[in-house]
Length: 317
Image (cartoon, rainbow, N blue to C red):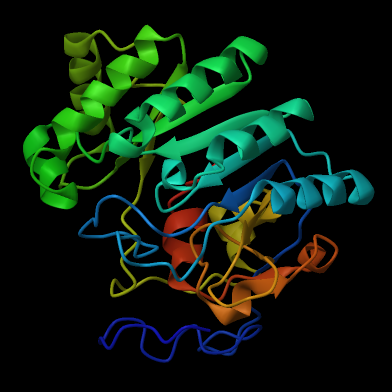
């Protein structure tokens, strides 16, 4: 796996796939009900955030652009494997940096899937050619396309601290364009800033009311609040006994229901990874096909504990 940051947190933990630091059996999750297949469209982004888990930036092309033929190939594999997929998700980077984003979304929509695109709703999405393509998609596939906009905080001050001065206003402008053109709109924020979940949702509710956005701040599928993914924070390892202790099931964890396709720089073909949060960690690289991706996943990373099991978060709707 990827080397964890040099810190006193988690010393000795997350070293072995199937055994914890205390010698207990590490929790393992099966792909029991595949519902979402994610495509990382590439790590290039128009901005560089302070705490981007995937290190997206205007110069990071560690994950290169996918193309429409590659997406169609995996959609064919979904049919072949008889996966009960309900949703196709596109993430980045900024997906609208990819020149084939509209075509890739259309390929998924033509198969009858719901499509979710994660975006910062800034300049790449606001290009005229992209706007025209998006409007055509919702005309051709009404009710099937959702855009989830990254809005780290409900105030410009804190959002801009993460994403750069002026980014809040540009994102809000993009959200207005989406709503005015009839798109289904959701928001992804960060559940941090020393506030409770209720306080965060109250802040988003006030913003949505002020801006006239048709988004329910108290609906977790419309306003998704992600826990901060800090690998330097001490977290417990998840053992097989934790399911009973926590009153949870392996089926509650994101890797029981989703996989993500990425294409690494210099690679001849894409590969499938276990989790949208761990695209760079070799242990979670499962192989080039969906058949390869059906293997069980050992929860051998701090994100598995903090984000998924204890945080209860999921990238899907």
